[in-house]
Length: 237
Image (cartoon, rainbow, N blue to C red):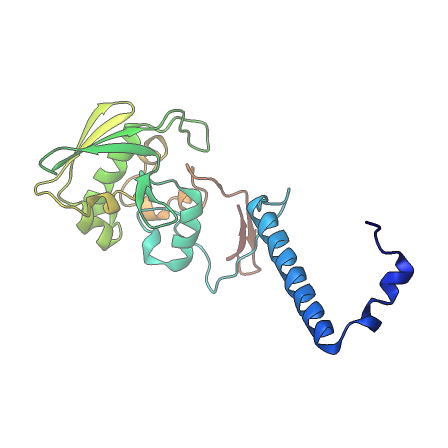
């Protein structure tokens, strides 16, 4: 069988009927659409979106940061937004809203009252110091101490929880009564004890570490830009 020549192909539309032309162009459109859909699907299934080198993301706000401190941040939206980027949590949420390990893994006793946490290996603060169970216990006990005036909702969640150090990387939290929602309470961002332990309760909210924090998350404060009235105009993380 001989394949038609180009000259013969040029006569194709002259020898087919109007109905055949409609059918031909309809099938051609379906074929092109299917090919385009397949190409897009192949592209999406075999590519991954990644951040550009030296790329930046800018977010505006109608306020200036004041407390980049987990004990106070929930009282102000801008502080809460930035703190989310600066600190890691003991436990965390996955993309489906399910509680997963964050800085620590945990197990629960059969009676539902005791939670044992083990910190992951090689966790460090932004100043290079290791993250330890002392940091978690210090944060919880500071929340429980009314003199520090942590956000009230945070205080009520933690006021009756007992803390116990097991080792440098393990600690135990004990409840008076079992509470199925306690893992959500443990989506808690902790403070570095070696930075904050010498700051008195009276000076806690006034400490410069509230705007120049030592942190454990994926970002840290790299630069503060000030307005003419000495307020913070922007932060670079």
